[in-house]
Image (cartoon, rainbow, N blue to C red):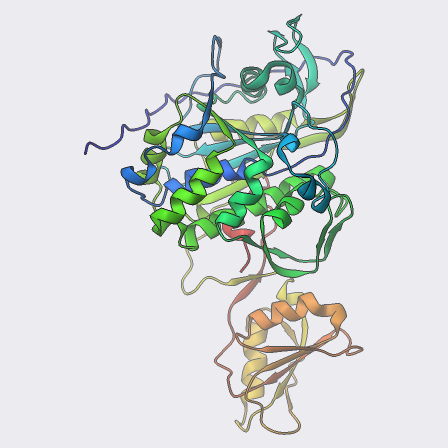
Length: 492
């Protein structure tokens, strides 16, 4: 059987981000609920194909894809750079949700012919990295000259919010608008309806999300205490839709979408889906059941990616939101828009065209990778007790915790009572996140809340003590574009 054709190597080039025009009047569109991660189901297919699945398994999967032609009659497009750029668009599909699902997951409101999420997924030329750039749906945009698909009216170029491009001109105008804003040539277009989102998440066995603090959103019904959670399809939909859990609004929502994508990649690459042809076809068929794509994205392209992207992991992915200059930029007739930071955005998309990593790359380290924890060890005060008959063990544990970054008292004490078999971490419930971070450094330790104990955590070393594991605070967004790698945001 001959191998699938290779994806052509695009020509490197650089195109500056075009200048914006001054805004003019246009009636503001009503705000719609934002569903977040519809396109996660499509990205999952790309990752699924990366497992080296055979051609016989992949063949025929693209027959369920509805085809569109977003590149028809397009002129004056940006020059291609290195790598492959996929525009992922999530559209409203509430008309296909059951009444029970509407009520349970608070999916009220009328469906709209609009986009709620837009992302550029860049697959590097060597197929070893995926860069996901989130574009806020309320971004201030210059709509190119076009004919409205709904009314048939011809429109000159005018300012709008980014999500209006789909409503006025469908996939073609959406691609044209994004290319005009970014200077990035789009190679493939994928559009996903959220109606298959829940089924796809359930098909992979759910995803694990870790929350550093409780998350509650009365609008979506999300209610998660701090800690790790296994989310099924419905809960995952609530998680990626929520935008009222903190003061970050849409930016926080985009970060949660990115975190979910990293968790999905983690589940796909470590959950056995890629090694089981039956499960692969089940998940891929579910994911593709709501996809619209350009004619050029099919079986051969998925298989070509699969051969190139073996070994793909969350560390192979990176996530970033386009740099923002003004979160509330007023436009007459439109209302408040999100204005990009022109200089930073230009540098971001230049890096994308030139196929450069967006997130800081980890330095080569000797020994095991430290466990990521939610609270920095240096902020955690610890009192060590020796709960065994081994002389000097308390002092050694105190020194080991201090070397790992914890703020120990340097005055270990002898525990009272019988010798402990299992190491114990006692903590005031108000410092539960600190306790979990400390327990990560003491594998197998028991956690016991003690109301009123105060801010100093108490460790009683047991006979099961094998040493202190290296830990570090989860890396904050850093680097020129505040991008993060997938392995920085998944659960430890």
